[in-house]
Length: 229
Ligand code: OGA
Ligand code: MN
Image 1 (cartoon, protein in one colour):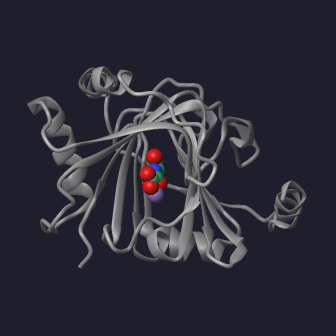
Image 2 (cartoon, helix red, strand yellow; image 1 turned 135 degrees about the vertical axis):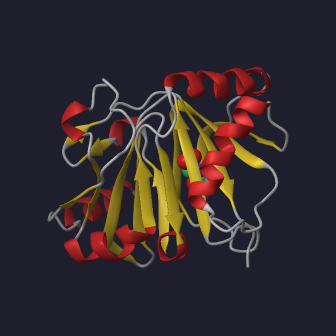
């Protein structure tokens, strides 16, 4: 299996196309200064144009203060749980998670901003918000979210760490997009990007975006989903 994965990596189309997204939020003075506008690379320009249009990454979607407010709300509950490392058949390795229906007003305000950007027109949403806490050594294997329980759009905030989300077309391993999910960014996957591509969060040792190493720390994601139509 290991050999196969290495081979796949080597046969990945080396051509990489960048997509510059402008960001209306103030730029953070983080360690990613040379990459700030570059949030998406892919196996072909065509793919970046087509599937890339169903993917949004908004760096700096929340402020440091807002991140702290969310963490304050989430940490006490998460701390009571142990990271799960043992279930090798799970899609996620090294994680603890929770769902939350009721949030303190400052958190609800942030989530409403996420909802209004990701789900215009008040589409019916999955009530509870999903909170996933990945250990530094944790990662999410390639998967497609359940079509039975979740609708066409997935929107996630990334707290505490930069990370790389990789989308790979099902049964077409040479068609891929890498997304740079900076700490405090929002990502949105829609339609084809959500249904026809697997998504994964790379483990620390594989975390390289367009040739640049992106150190993975512990990462908490706060994910809003809509209901199937
Ligand atoms: C998931 C998932 C991505 C993230 O929980 O299904 O893909 O940002 N999470 O944590
Ligand atoms: Mn998922």
